[in-house]
Amino acid sequence: MKKTLLIIASLLFITSTVIPQSKMNINNLVEYGGKKYKPNVDKPYTGLVFDLYRTTGNKSLEGRYKDGLKNGKWEWWSENGKMDSTGQYTHGKKNGEWIINKYKDHPFKFVLTYDDGKISGSEFAIDSLGNKYILKNSLVHNEGLKYEKNIKTPYTGPVMEQWYNGKIKLIGYYKDGLRDGNWEFWFDIGWDDYSSTFKTMAGEYKDGTAINWVITTDPEKNILEKFDLTVTSNETKGIVKSNSGELIIDDSWVRIKVYAQQFAWNIHYTGQDGKFGETKLYLIDDVDNPIGLDRNSTYGADDIYTINELVLPVNTNVLLEVTTKATYAGVAIEDLSQYKDIMDELYHILLIPELNLLQEARINVWNNIKINVKETGNYTMRCVHYCGIGAYRHKGFVTITEEESYQAWLEEEKLYLEENSDVDDWGDDDW
Ligand SMILES: [Cu+2]
Image (cartoon, rainbow, N blue to C red; front, side, top):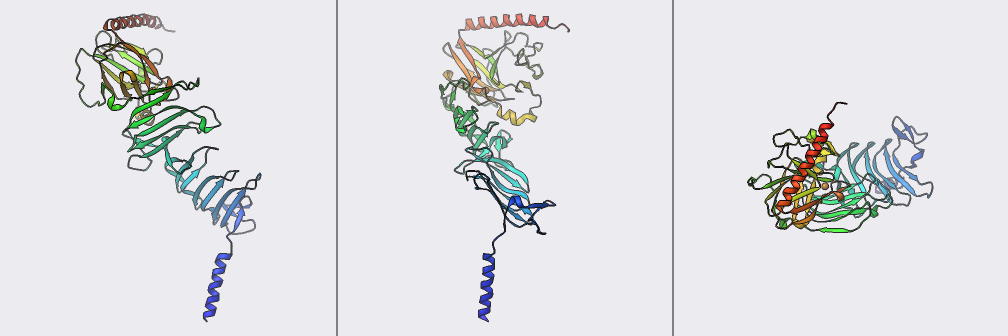
């Protein structure tokens, strides 16, 4: 009796190990009603499938079917035998984490999470060491902080963004939803070698604010000269970062508004009355009226504006108010909420290193700089945020001048303005 049991047990053991799982070349399966069948078999296929490269005979895929549907782990290999992509199916639908090789010879693979066939959550890139970077366009914006999709706490971890051709555009890091740590930006030059893209900016963020930046000029001409623009936030003078506190200034202060855009600085002066005219979005015209100044508004008639030319009187209290134009690619945007994601990213950072002056230019926000420069001089104002492919040429000229020549310059600009408004009247005829 004991002997019989032993024989049965060993028979069971043999059957379960020796009978191999069915394995087929995927090209030989046939499909009926959305399910795969082995030829000449009336039950949907259950078992492994594979495919081989015709050129090398190397395996190109291995997958699993259950009752005619993809089920379980699927893997793909490139022709040289390297792992390409892998993921899991449940009853014919993608489920769980998928690692996908989107670009040949790219240093990153991409990670998507599926739930019952649909993409859920944010997309990530994964490097050869297995570090996961969230893709920047996969982040969710809320109240100035960045989140992973479907996650309630702000994102902490690496971030990556690519150019349209897959080349790496930036690598950075978020902490509690704000930019933090080292960030690097590359231009998209060439197609072949992912490592040859041109680094244009690198720097550090702390709690969302840029500090310690290095930028490289003119990648179009391939000038590799580097500027060392080291401004540490706590060394920066004359900056009123907060907009909530009351701004205490009197009439002796010169007020100047700075409107950033891709890739220029529009400077708005009050004119003789010391007060700004109104600016209106619908009046913005990139050539004729870049700040949308309403000449018919109460204080607007004598206002002056320049492009990329900031002139300040020496030994004078000046309040610079910095913002970004509500335009995208030159088109005025009325309803910012629709474009919140773009607008959150489309900001600029004004830097005048010699004056130790650094301020963010953000849409719908006036950031203030109180400044009183003690010496005359000429400087460059530049943008140290990567605000687009032309960020390196986002710069203007700064002149600190004696009070007298400042007034003379204003007068000159005013005359120029009057001359031009004559031309405008001339053009008002009906056509
Ligand atoms: Cu900029």
